[in-house]
Each structure stands twice: as C-alpha cells, then as structure tokens.
Length: 161
Image (cartoon, rainbow, N blue to C red; front, side, top):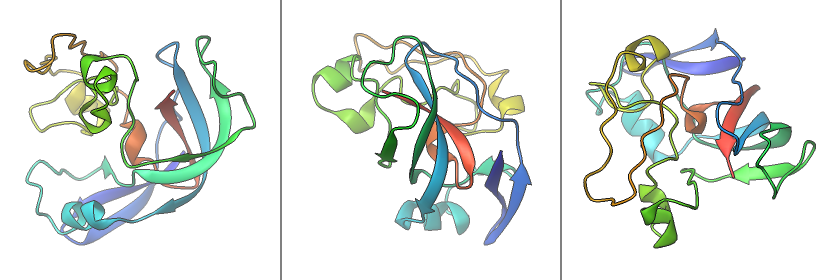
C-alpha cells in the first residue's frame, strides 16, 4: 500500500508499505478512496509530539470500500462503502460498553511501544503490552502492524467493526 509518512518536522513522504492483513476475527480491510487532514495531524506534522519518528504513518479520518472482512464481522460486507471517524473502537471493552468510544482499549492493534502507539512495526514488535489500569476489562492486542487509524489514501487499511 502507499502511505504518507512523517519524515521530520514539516516533512512528509509517500512510501510503499506492506499491505494490511486480517489479524483479528472482527477486522475489516478497507480500500481507502478519500482522506482528510485534521488539526491533530498538524500537531504531528509540526513536531509537537516528541514520540514521532521518521516513518510513522499519518492520516486517520477516511472513507472507502470494504475489501476484506474477518469471519466474525456481521455489520459490513465486501463492497460496502464506509466512513471512518478519527478513532476506532471495539464496542466490547469496558470503555465502549460505557460509551467512552475514544478511550477504547482495543481500537489500536499495535502493542504499546516506548514511543507510544503508531510506531513502525520494528519498534512496536519488541514492546511489552501495558493495558490501562483504569479499565477492568483491559485486553492488550499483540499485533505489530501499522495503526489502522493512520492509513492515508490510496491504500488499504485495517479496521474493526
């Protein structure tokens, strides 16, 4: 897939990355058609987030067509057109059950890394999961693939239903 990556303060590049794959039975892979830049992207681009490293993928609000679904996906099918908001939630963790969608424990498939979520796979793969102590149902995920919420177009991205 092609993705816009952060290369340094106010510097980006379009790079070819590995295509996403279904990792969780509730995953969806989207063929992204359009994406937008929002204010939080400007914080990343401007270097205001010290955890940013060259190669981190930018972009997290997009729309597209469902290209592949995991076996437990019930609400969408291949070919559906969807819009993805700025955060992705699982609908099942303590936060989601309490309608605190943006705090979802499972919305990002990357392991936490010393630099935070969204780190390139090589950095995330060696990190130890650290679930939120505030959530009684905290369940860290173990994938080391790029974050699904940061895939710009044109590309395919992994999402959850």
